[in-house]
Image (cartoon, rainbow, N blue to C red; front, side):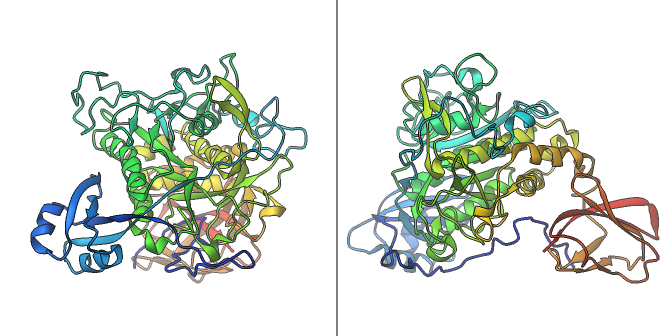
Amino acid sequence: MSKPEISINMKKVLLGVLTLFICSQGIAQEPEFVANEVLVQFNEGYNPDTLTQELASIPIVSSKLVSRPMNIWLLELAPSVTENNAVNELYKVNQVLEAQKNHKITSRAIEPDDPLFGNQWQYKQASDGDIDADEAWEITTGGTTMNGDVIVAAPLDDGIELTHEDFGDNLWVNEAEIPGNGIDDDNNNYVDDYLGWSIVSNSDNISGGSHGTPVAGIIGAKGNNGIGVSGVNWDVKLMVIKNNFNTNEAAVIEAYSYALEARIRYNDTNGAEGAFVVSTNASWGIDFGDPADAPLWCMLYDTMGENGILSCGATINGNFDVDVVGDLPTACPSEYLITVTNMDISDTKVTNAGYGAETIDLGAHGAGAYNTQNGNGYGGFGGTSGATPHVTGAIALLYSAPCQDLAELAMSDPARAARIVRDFIFSGVDPNPSLEGITTTEGRLNLNNSLVELMNNCENLSVSSIEAPLPFVLYPNPTEGVLTIEHNANQKIQELTIYTLDGRLIKAFTDITSNTIHLDTLSKGAYILNVTFEDHPEIQYNQMIIKE
């Protein structure tokens, strides 16, 4: 019997085929897709040339590899075949894993609906309706892990104003590449990708950024440098990937794959090559999109997560229940995707921002949040586009915490490290009435809470404790009150205690005669279960549990 996976985001479930209707708002809507194009994932080693020989009924005009790690191709079809027919025919080929239309993507940016502010109220304000950044910065201001891994966050957007005064050395560069020599110096299959990558021009021309400059600034405008503003991280490397979000799904997959390849290479070479990418940001998407129509896009988040990358997605800028109407990417069921809605200066969810008790995870300040702008300036941003990069930045900040166990785990088991960081983001939220019952955490991002919980639980994060292979399983987890613990060798429980995530003892069980534990008196939330068994009472095992 295998150990169940632990996740605070247990409410997020596989949606399958969503019913696309909008209650009291209008008629059903179908996301637009690019005509005469389909996306296909093949088995490893298979390609469109071989497909053409096996499937003459699909006339392929051209093909393009958009994700090397996942072997995903964009196929241009002759007008004589419809996209639906092509997808149906492709599924008849054994080497085809997934096939779908290539949906178009639109920006999530909106004009700020609040007055501009002269300071960054989202970080600190008198009402305390903020993310407590000033307190979090007492623990860390970003930059590197305890092992010296340089932390990288990757915003996928319309580029960045490269000459803006307040990014400084926070802009990532590929130091293994010689700029402008026309050679792929580091053999990563991208020529001259010194400044990052633009899938628009197939070069490192990432300039632009009327939308991307504030997004990047929220994540990591240079802090404590006497210039302008500060990002969530004073120090971080911003890997800018230009995808001009008013585009299509193939472009999205291609852009994500640049960050994915960099992290895979970093993992495979123990940090000698590639980049330590820990988070990506998508402040764009498809309104009313159905994850069932975009399996490749949604699966990409799992693949990135398995390699240590958490992704953040901005939900729809509209008062819609995403559980009902759908959205891409924020209805994708991946446990490595964090979905964000928009909060205003009064710490209330903006009316025109999406929600979903099963799909949208938390709120963050976006409406009028003050940060960098193009023209070497500063001002208010807005929409879920502005909310989401606060969470993307928070992920990077947590990786910089002075916690040796997390730094070790980030390299030895990147996927588990990512899940741990995600769980502390979730458990650290400030409960918020405007999010109650309509988000999975029912709260708003709080940097300091998440960092404090991580630090107080740091010693439980080691490979040999909370995330190590355990000689027992416990179920159900989450639990409503009764928890069963089964040892693989049927050993009896010696001692069992329950702690909060910040290390406070909640309950100690004595005279244990059964492997069934009653937790009815515990409040809802996440806890650490500490248990020993009679065969090796000197060994303590820790496991995170969720009480619902």
